[in-house]
Length: 88
Image 1 (cartoon, rainbow, N blue to C red):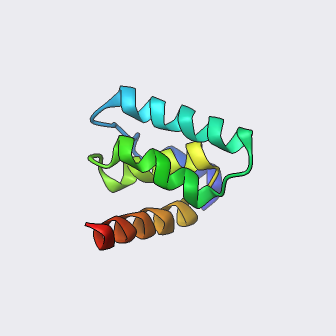
Image 2 (tube, helix red, strand yellow; image 1 turned 90 degrees about the horizontal axis):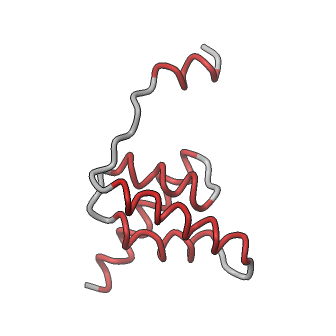
Image 3 (cartoon, helix red, strand yellow; image 1 turned 120 degrees about the horizontal axis):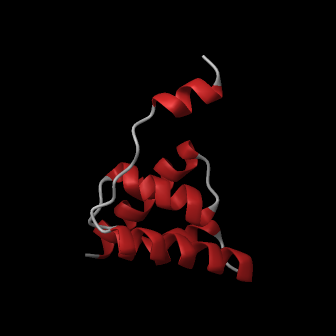
């Protein structure tokens, strides 16, 4: 199976709050372009906008907003949630 076949068979992600979805991606891209900030810091900053979304939606935000790979984005979601749970 090629990459094009797998991307065609995936279902489209539908965020519960499309405005926050787009805002989080824009904020992440802006922070990344500005420089001097790690991908983890960007992920933690934009997570607050999409924390009530499904995991797949958050992963997509991290991919587009932070420039992560799909597997890397899943790891970041796990790490951000774990870190927030410790501070609560």
